Amino acid sequence: LDKLFTPLQVGAVTLNNRVAMAPLTRLRNTEPGDVPTELSVQYYTQRASAGLIIAEGTHISRTAKGYAGAPGIYSEEQVAAWSKVNASVHAAGGKTALQLWHTGRISHRSLQPDGEAPVAPSAIRAESNTNVRQPDGSLARVPCDEPRALEISELADILEDYRRATDNARRAGFDLVEIHGAHGYLLDQFLSPEANVRTDAYGGSVENRARFLLEVVDAVVAEWDAEHVGIRISPLGVFNGLSNVEEQDIALYVIEQLAKRKLAFLHISEPDWAGGPALSEAFRQEIRKRYPGVIIAAGGYNAEKAEKLIGEGYIDAVAFGRSYIANPDLVERLRSGAALNTPDAATFYGGDARGYTDYPTLNN
Ligand SMILES: C=C(C(=O)O)c1ccccc1
Image (cartoon, rainbow, N blue to C red; front, top):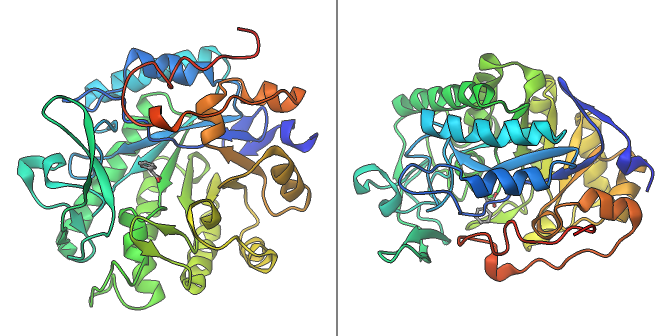
């Protein structure tokens, strides 16, 4: 495992190693306000030896919210709270990115301003669930509500929300931002003919369905610059009521268009961790032919698989999710070949310190 622990230049930022913490929704932010807590500071700081911490999906506006307990990056209170996270992680030598998230139709009226319908490319309800707050404060899984179709005139407002969120993330001390374009959320909904049946310039052809994702990338880049911006996509993914298994053409088109923008990184969530097809070697070659820039891979990896694919040139770094939930010192454990703690799925979402900040490290 020698490649995994070598530095990597990711846009403007030099990572000490190629082990990233994947963006992990933990639903432990306070409501009302959608604000990270002191526990969040501890949780992220414990994991600062990661080459890069990609902090959890963070909604860019009130209407972008799709889960009770998720954090935001649209208010000064949220910026101040994230600033504490970054000050502490940076003091521990870590690097951070914030995942800018609009959930689109993966939402519920109880999470929307004035109980409005969630927004999406088209008024097609997702066959999926989300987390809402019960009267007693606990979380419950409920079916997503039917969204309303966005007017073209509203798209400019959402671009402005991404721009403002990018400025807020930079002010809050993040080293990078990652646009969430994966897992059946708003931008992925635009890519999918199952969620996007628009007949205007944002629907129909591959170019039209990719248009809004690329406009978001351009807006975020214009606000900061390409070397501080990454994006996560989930080509051929099966998530949140979408099956992109047959969507090779739009996946490769998007990757080709992203390459032109010379972003800091492309983060690919591979479909096989959640029921999609494993990426074939042929498809990996098609991706690499189009995208010479930094690729971070995620999805059921282990250190050996990451080392192999880095050695073959298909990826440059790996992001671990569940392993990082349970192993704050994951880098040290991988380096020394130590056993890993087992993640406790019962405490993944919501709750308190249990299953969040109480996993043991090797030396405690
Ligand atoms: C942001 C998420 C994603 O990217 O899939 C998420 C949200 C809730 C639970 C698990 C994952």
